[in-house]
Length: 257
Length: 223
Image: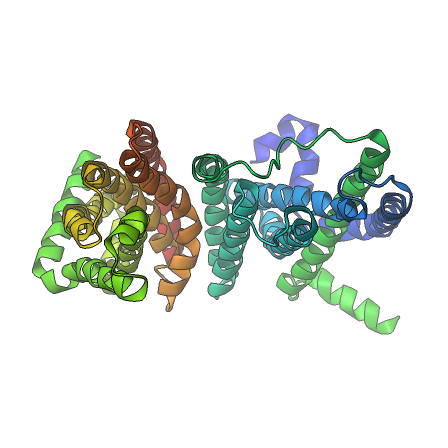
């Protein structure tokens, strides 16, 4: 890989990214700002969405859970791709940092998927009259939760980090190939088996007054996700690199302070 | 390359033939569990007929899952898997050969006995041909997808339960189209559509699963 870094200076950042120490120090500088940004966006979005956005004509105030449900579902799906891409980078470029990112993305993604299902169930009761429906989207989110839990369980089953990393990455990639197939087949299964009593996909386009706070919430959740991913990855770096000199120095410096 | 495929196909078939009792257990499981359905739900023919396509497919899936565990296990234990890993040829071909042998030993007998279960669960007459066709293609997909899971968990001491956890979500598209094929034939619709999709899934699995399984088998040398 040496020729690559000589070849073009634009590759430098990519190789630097492979160093856990560099990642730890850089994210340490970014974290306060990112957390502040996430906090401001989330509090603005929540206040705006829950307090000031107009009521829905049909659903009344119950629709307001959308400000939690939609961003969480977005990130549950995006998180899987982040995990799979990190795994692929690890397999291809043998970068140990990306495996740490992959391992950290799994529990966050699983928690978000669970939250998406949970908020969906709460929202389903007043609007659909039931907590659970075998709707295409609900079912594919449930399968996504299974995929996440598979990756999680596999990673923890191996004693050596290296084997767990690679196994998790392979499974995440196999899952990535499957997600569009699962989504399409569940969609088709739903249209075949059930009458379309609930139109989940053709919701009326939103009024800007309702949409703008949602956008703020989505941005806020992206920032929050990044903060969470950084925190998990930093903890994982410290755990795996605990024998390296720089982590020991860090611990000593923390002790003296 | 093809020699790796045929050599391992022949070897695994011979091994299965010498251990006939072991190879028969998924089939016996498949037949036995079908007795539980009338006992547990209802012996009434009309109600059984309604659920028969889905039940037969779910049972075929479970029976395949039960046997996937042992796909690489004995090779891993006696060290012949390591010999395979250091051999100079493309690892995916022997893996495909082993998976094909696995299908011939489990998926094919399941497919062939499924009409018998259809009679026991009073499957409507127009459902038999689509069921056999969909099971023939579908159990192939199940064996191939299962081979990835088996390769990932082969070096773990308690891999069996974990394997089903990993593989089950990946099986879901197969069971959807498998039971849809039978159901639409019973309802009097054209059933070539879902069957064609099952065929496409099988083609994609043949191309991709052995590569993923071969990559996963390389892990065993790490652990």
